[in-house]
Length: 351
Image (cartoon, rainbow, N blue to C red):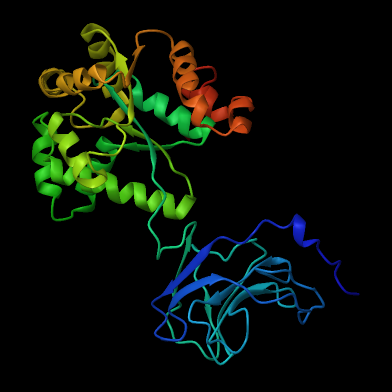
């Protein structure tokens, strides 16, 4: 019995791009674009719509030379995604019922393929074109002000992408790259990491997130920490671009110190101690507060009293993010993780 024909108007347009690399086959490696093949009946009897094959999104090669279209498609008969060579012969496949080609699991090397299986990357935007401009809000506050928790809440509950300069720097340090030693030296001393390193990490992380998730709303946690950071930002986005808004978490030093020393019991961070805390706070006052004044002079900053309860602080943060957030995400009830971040329910015990 043939499958029911799907109304093309009910299908989401295929706007995704697939990049295949490392197969060892020139005719397979490259960019696969959304299929423009006209509706046709597949081997399983499904009549496909534009950009689809067997009821799932499908891709054709950008050079248009393939003899079998689409060249990356789904087989209902074998319940698998398949990558074909330009001559139509199957090179790689993977058993899956996912709506999109799997990118994490390893694909199977078929008769006309060459081992190892290639890497498959999904792009939400055409990688040949410039990315859409990101919608950025800078998040600043002293160490322990709770800005990281609020950013995590906004990511979990409202769909924003949270990028912490501290987390990016620590990850780069732990990866042991060419700048690892430099990052370690500055972090341990409670000083700001050189501008070139910080801004480059942010730029790369934003581009990767936009291409892989399609999201353009970003909270940059801990940036810009200095006027020098702003110069780095201008170098990337230009001085003529509109200056992002800032949320500044205001909190007395005594409260910050209490929070940091309490966090030190379980954080495992080398800079969560009284000495580093004092250095970090002094650096914050000397380097970051002038940046705050710059944003104030341009009416681009909203000050948040971070000494309040987490619920009250999050209410203020959510109010400021709401105009740029999907209304369905704003209206949804708190998730379990959000409730844990707000302290409304305990975190599960580690076994």
